[in-house]
Length: 403
Image (cartoon, rainbow, N blue to C red):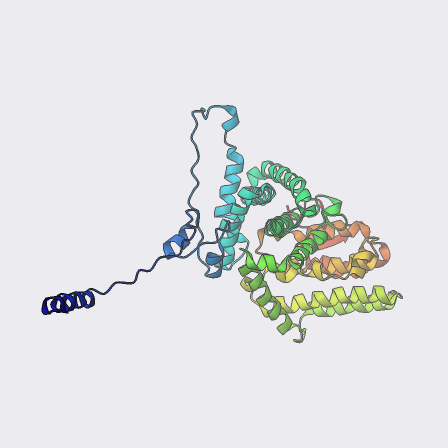
């Protein structure tokens, strides 16, 4: 190699060191989506696009908002009767979101669930929307007595429509509709608590009774527990678990209140008059569960008491007690009559106002002369007296009680 070739070769090597080849990184191809929620987009994370709330927002307790889908505008005039707005239902929906939902709980995240998430499910499942409108109509009538008759009729209409549409969905119960079915069941329970006494079936028997519907709500949780916990109802069920631990804590505390003495008297009467050991066990188990509920009531200030504290009782009733209720036996009636005073501990709840009095007014005609003395204490507690063999009270006639 001559001197000129050496110079050229050295220059070439130096140039290669001065300009090293840069490594290139190619991004893996991935599927982009424009349909995720706005919250995930803002946080620049992948959204699983679950509606009405995605998994990320549920996990981090964030408000999950989706962009409105584009709707093709047609030239059809709104004056066409097919496009008329149902202003009554819109009023009920507005009342629910701005007022009714705020009365269903005191915990802010739970209020948000009832006021925002539940209506979103209503737009997907029509039976949930009927449940919303039925409850809101009752609430509007409660707040505006001059409109009560009209609102009650509308509530009854939506309640019936909801039941007609939910029944087939319940028979096809699955993970896909589990949350919607539970929400409808809960809304229907509240409706039934408010309207108890309007029909005989709402008191004791049939699938429309408050006992059956309360048990159904808890059964749905057991059937789809994992699915419900992973979805929008997860925080609500977690709060329920904390409540259960509280109830367990106070279960062994001493019962230093007059209701405990009255329940012990009822238990003693049952032990004396009932010979069947299985029936006796069923009655006493129901009474023991009532006692535990009362311990929770007395351990908390009124603002700390919750609906689930009281209406776990129907769910906890044994199969043996439910069988006896089919008759119903006099002992069953007496036990339920004593339960009627417990919702009074939640007197601030508008949907429970008068519940105990209406319940007892329906039970009274079913109790024979021999067992009337068994329910004197519940009647006194609810301000009801028996005159001429029929209960009357300062609240009006039995059919008007609580109205």
